Image 1 (tube, helix red, strand yellow):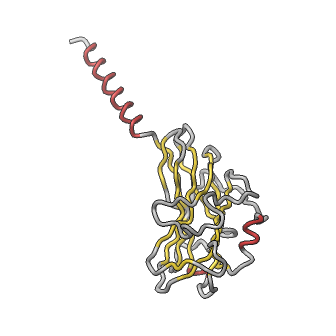
Image 2 (cartoon, rainbow, N blue to C red):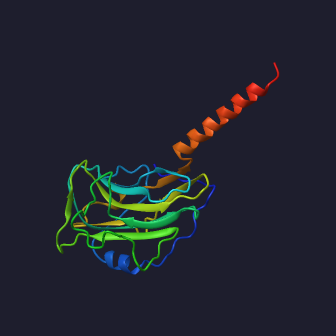
Image 3 (cartoon, one colour):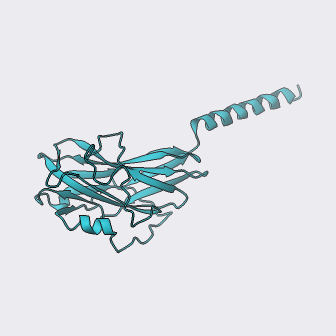
Amino acid sequence: MDVSFDAHPRKSLPTRRPGRVRWFLSGVVVWLTVSANAHAGLILMARSVNAGLGTANNRLEFTVRNTGSEAVSVNGFALGFEVDRPELIVEDVTNNNRLARYIFRDHSLFGPSLIDPSVPPGQFVVASDLYDIQGSSVSLAPGQTRGLGVLLFTAPNELLVANVLLDPAITSLSLDSDLIPSNQVTLVNGQITVTPEPGGMLLAACGGLALAGIARRRRPR
């Protein structure tokens, strides 16, 4: 299910495709469409995460899962996405996935940083990668999930919820063939929730209990 909030409306996205992505999209591409009702063969997902107030090096991972009945050969991908709260600071997108093995591990052409150098990271981010052996690809078996990069970000010192909105005009996979129709591919947006650190919550709770105890001792009998 796609995540969407009206409180912070989506800003207009760039219409000009960055240099690296323009070149990437000149190959065989299956466009990904946002469709909650599609019986997806491929699901590209921005995972939802929590981050502590004011913390750095937070991670949100992108993954692709093959829910179809046949293997798919992937030789490249592009991610275009917007973080809809400017208070969150985007640091980088790298190929250091942990939730699932990075799809081009040991064969990343652009890694470890996947951000397109023609688009400095901000609220709108473009990242991409290719298999580094020309004419080769990675097979994504039925039921298999692979990583497509990690968004690194710094959380602000305020509680908030931010949406990570994948742009279907840029987000794409490059396959060895074009046998998979676009209506069998689904994008799933992610969400970042900035919350108090557990230690800070515990300290606040202990402080509240201490104040309550002092108030009780001072209460006249």
